[in-house]
Amino acid sequence: MSVLISDEQIEILISESEIKARINHLAKEISDTYKKSDQLVVIGLLRGSFIFIADLVRRLNLPVEVDFITVSSYGNEMESSRQVRIIKDLETSIKNRDVLVVEDIIDTGHTLAQVLQIMQTRKPKSLSVCTLLNKPSRREIEVTVRWTGFDIPDEFVIGYGIDYAQQGRNLPHIGFVHRP
Ligand code: IMP
Ligand code: MG
Image (cartoon, rainbow, N blue to C red; front, side):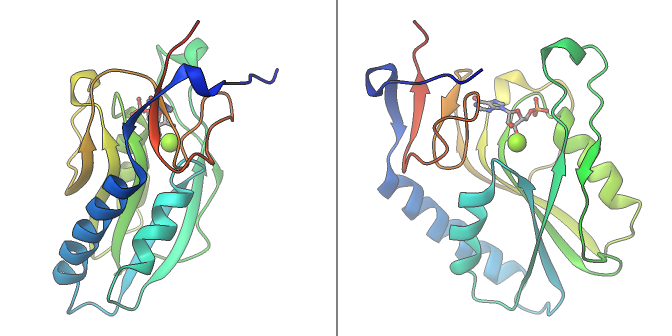
């Protein structure tokens, strides 16, 4: 079922220029951290991270490889099990590589915790996380996140890659959705 979201339902939380400035800052820190590495693989979780990763890697002052992974979201009906499954795996071997996992938003933490567990079995040299958004008040499982774009309150957001029922990914900013 498709859902249309009207402009009136969206309240801008983080503007395009705020996102840009924050990514510049993150990219500097990440470039600095990995400056001695010629082994960095940046892994985006699809689909939500696609715009963030595109902007982030273009500001890294480093040689990088980029790959993507898609995992199933558990959805409401599976909320008790919280199990995620790989739908599309990496094509790159991450053994002995420096790995940076890029996520759009960390909510309960279950998705990322399981992705990191899977990545860890592949024996990377290092494994870190950069997320654009974080909802700390929603966390159910601890995950170590090295770089966070913005901490946000417990509200449903869309834009800049992040969707509501597949809508809103193409918005240049991040906004709250007021549901009617
Ligand atoms: P977690 O396993 O609860 O941390 O779920 C993380 C995933 O839920 C994110 O990668 C998003 O795909 C989705 N998600 C969580 N909060 C939001 C939101 O406010 N808007 C859109 N998607 C969200
Ligand atoms: Mg996601």
